Image 1 (cartoon, rainbow, N blue to C red):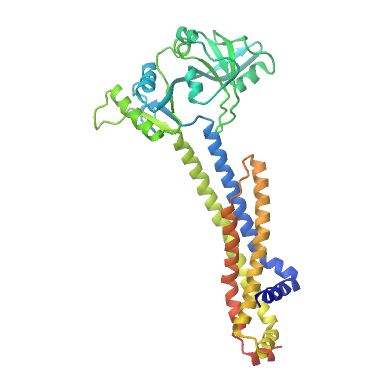
Image 2 (cartoon, one colour):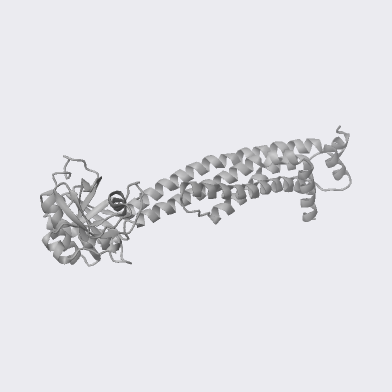
Length: 404
C-alpha cells in the first residue's frame, strides 16, 4: 500500500515536471548553501589548525609586560626585560619543559652583490629550531663555539635565499647587514605563510650573542619560546613557568605579573572560534531558503489539491479513507522535499569542492551536516505538506464531485 502511494506521488510530481522543479528550487538552494558553507568553513578551520601547528607543537611564548598592554602602560615597556639566565632557568627548573629558546629580532636590509632585501634578523640558538619544530634542509646548525663566541654565522629562510641568491649556490657565501658580514651555513625548510598572513620563511637566524653585541647593543631577550614535552599539558607548563618567573622577578603575592605566558592553543581556539561563528551565521542565513522552499511546497500542494478536487472526490466516493488521501498528498510533499534535498546535497558538495580549490583549503565534507540537511528537507515536506494533505482528506465527497 505504501509503495503504491509513493508511485502515485511520483506520477503526480512528474506529470508537472517544470512546476515540481520550481517548487523544490528553494529546498535545493537551501540545502546546497548550507552544505557548501559548512564544508568551506570546516576546511578553513582545518587550514587554520594546520598553519598554527607549523609554529610548533605544545608551544608557549614568554614575554615581558602584561598581555594586551601598550607601550608606556603599567606592565608594558616599563617591565624588566628577559635574559639568557631566564631561558636557562625555565629549561632546567620546569620539568614539563622540553626546550626553551631565546628570541630577539630586528628588521634590517641585507645586501649581496647588487641585490638587497629587507628582512627580520633573528638572534637565537639551536634550541629555537627544536622548539619551532623546524629543520635545516641544507648545511648545518650553529656550532657551540659559534654560539659562545657570537660569530656572525647565518641560517637563511627560503624567502631570503630566493631574494638574495635565486637558484645559485648559497652555503659558504657571505652577505652584509649594514657593516656586518655574515657567512651562510644553512638553509631552513620552507614553512609558508602563517595564519596571520606573515611569511615565516622571511628571516635570517644568527647566534643570540652576535645579535646582542652587534645589532641590539644590549643583553635583553625579546621573547622566550618554550616547547612542552609531548603528552603533557601546556596548562600545567604555563602555570609552572608563571610561578618560576614570579620568583625570579621578585613579584610579591597580590601583585600583577610584569610578564605574560602565551599559549599557542589560544590562537588556534580564537581563530577556529571565529571561523565556526562565521560558518554558523552564513549557514543560518542559507537555511532561510529551506523555510522559503517549504512555503513554496505548501503553496503548490494547495494548488494541486484544488486542481485534483474531482479526483479526490472519486477516491473518497469509491471507498478511500481520509487517512489514505492524507497519506497520498503528504508523501507527495515529502518526496518533493527529498528530491530537492538530494539535488541540494550534490550541488552543495560540488560548490564546496570548487570553494576549497579556489581558497586553497582542504575539502572536508561533514557527513553529519549532510545527514542533518537531508533529514531537515524531509521535515520541511512533512510540516508544510501536512496542511494541504489534511485539507484534501477532509473534503466532502459530494462537494468534491460537483467541483468543476
